[in-house]
Image 1 (cartoon, helix red, strand yellow):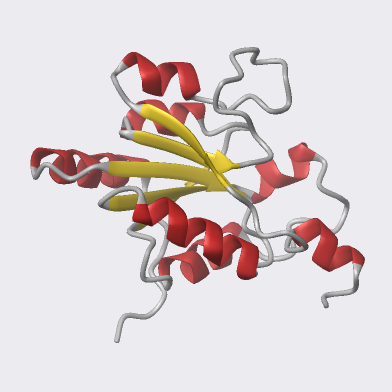
Image 2 (cartoon, rainbow, N blue to C red):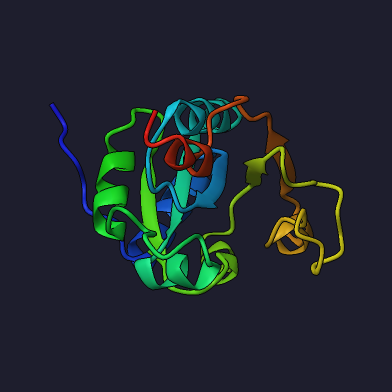
Amino acid sequence: MNGPQPPMRIAAASELCRAWRESGERIAFTNGVFDVLHLGHATYLAEARRRADRLVVGINSDASVRRLGKGPERPIHTAEDRAALLSCLRFVDAVAIFEEDTPLDLILVLRPDLLLKGADYDAACTDASDPRYIVGAAEVRSWGGAVETVDLVPGHSTTGILRRGGR
């Protein structure tokens, strides 16, 4: 049985993506904080993986989460713990932690074929100042990739769960 895996270094994730691409596999990428893993996350990630042969998940570092202004208690779990938990999901092929405020640098290194975000974003939005804009969309399209959204599970968000006291 496979246990939790440590997050991949970006160079290792890039090499893995290169090998998958050379094997003809389609690579999807998504990102987020994934601080309190819940049904919404699992459903979203399973659907993301269904759309490609491989799924790479980028997660915000602890410092990056704090800069996002998610709240004074966030992140609840360390980036390493969040990455290890995500690595246990059978539909996640690799997890990498990014330090920046956005995953753009990671996207540029990995060059995914498909960039995915939740449906609270807009794949057609081209205004980078719009909160619905998907970071990396223009870049992924520039090398022939696609950008899509995945429907969210109503009532399942980390913020909502924490607001309800974990229920």
